[in-house]
Image (cartoon, rainbow, N blue to C red; front, side):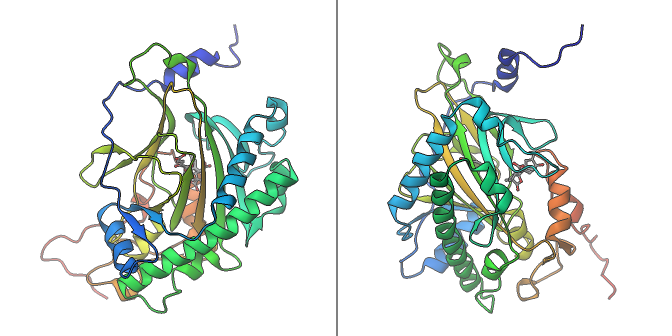
Amino acid sequence: MVVLAKPAALEQISLLRTPEPWETFSGVPAVDLSGPDAAGDVVRACEQFGFFSVVNHGVPAGVVDRLEAEAVRFFASSQAVKDASAPAGADPFGYGSKRIGRNGDMGWLEYLLLAIDRDALSEKASRAATSTALRDAINEYVVAMRGLARTVLEMVADGLGVSPRGALADMVTGDASDQVFRLNHYPPCPLLQGLPPSCSVTGFGEHTDPQLVSILHSNGIAGLQVALHDGRWVSVPPNRDAFFVNVGDSLQVLTNGRLKSVRHRVVAGSGLKSRVSMIYFGGPPLAQRIAPLPQLLAGLPLYREFTWGEYKKAAYRSRLGDNRLAPFEEPPVAAGHHHRS
Ligand SMILES: C=C1C[C@]23C[C@@]1(O)CC[C@H]2[C@@]12CCC[C@@](C)(C(=O)O1)[C@H]2[C@@H]3C(=O)O
Ligand SMILES: O=C(O)CCC(=O)C(=O)O
């Protein structure tokens, strides 16, 4: 007998996680972008945690609310409508359900993954976003996220003493920058009904983001967890009024490991409400060389130079949880041995 597809219940069972107690983290750094030492606060948060929340960000609530409402409308449309937005060719952009990437990663979610060209949806992505209202809401939101990414990266440069202060920001807001945007919908999982609250399913498996920074917003339903630098996983309290900024692998390399990308994941529960999140990934042009910035090199470089295109290609062939920077790490220099130039 040929089994063509795993029955839905089996897919859910394989996403079940070992029951664990939640520790809600009260120490998420909140950076007030209008504060007197915002640049110092951003750098300290990126060094200590690799993520932070942003308040007083200047993004109008209406921009977020409009997109959230359109995202909810899109995910509530019929399966046939959503499936018509599934990726057609080699690129992964479009609607997806449960399968994340093409290398076997699964999660209890559906999503719309879209490529952004300058400050709007790319031509192909425009076809995947099914209504004018959704497209307009995404375009409006992306402009706000590009501005926020620029502000954050200028602050990183200021805080680290990198000049010009636009050196990092230009990588993600230049005309050829490689930006990605994703809407995620995590419905409550029926399999969990009647199980203790410590039971959950994998919503989005643990990973670091490959780009320089990503900016996340969610609808106030819990689920995001991050790994602290001591290895402990903690839940991030949801906050509708804030954005969460993650340091990505490329920023880790550019700062020679001084800022560290953050491992994060989403767990989905049995609650009554769905989690809806939107995340903007700020990546550089494909030809951009990524290597520790000479201004930040106190000792030896920890990474060899690569282009974003090379890294992205490798990332898209990897599993979600892989350490995708490993192939680019310089081997540690043994004591007493010196580099010859
Ligand atoms: C399994 C995968 C999904 C992903 C591409 C990858 O092969 C490994 C990295 C994943 C990730 C994580 C951050 C956001 C994202 C869009 C990206 O650039 O890398 C996703 C990719 C995806 O969802 O296709
Ligand atoms: O939904 C979330 O909160 C995080 C999603 C995420 O990490 C991703 O889309 O890469």
